[in-house]
Image (tube, rainbow, N blue to C red; front, side):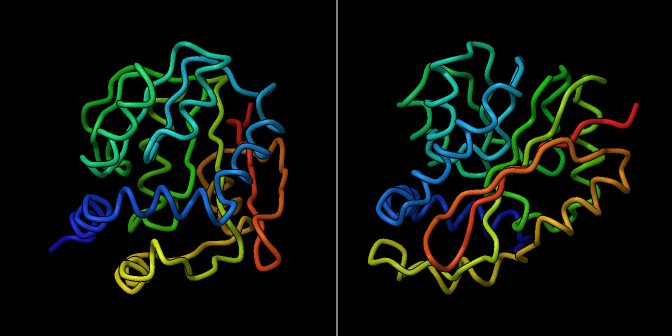
Length: 204
């Protein structure tokens, strides 16, 4: 089974548990703080590449109207659809075959370490990014194995599907593809790891 299908199967089966895990472990709280630090840099239209249950979309909707959400998982998109009237698609974030219009802001939150072809994904995202647009990464580092009663039954499968990547390596990949890092922020998730917010714009 292709890795993308395995990811889809995992989250179709654990979407509710994952949502609870993110809430009780402080991950959503950290995402809220990061978004607050980045909000002045965000412009519409916005694409959330891996919207999950719709947590970020719900926050973004307080300030913006032109937002599209996407996720690998059908079950996740259904959860997200209940939280917002935003358009939600279920596409492969590496290829985004159904996307033809362009965005000013593309957000990759807790997504990049799942992608098997990261360089290919960046090239695809660049094609649907306005020339004066930006790609925002919100990723945790170092990656810590999920530990909660909600995720204990899913952790083994999750860990087999990811390839954690540091902010420095993300920056290297983005630079290779013609981007420059314009802003970096971070906040603590807990005593073991942080959540980073990285904004990249195309080189002029």
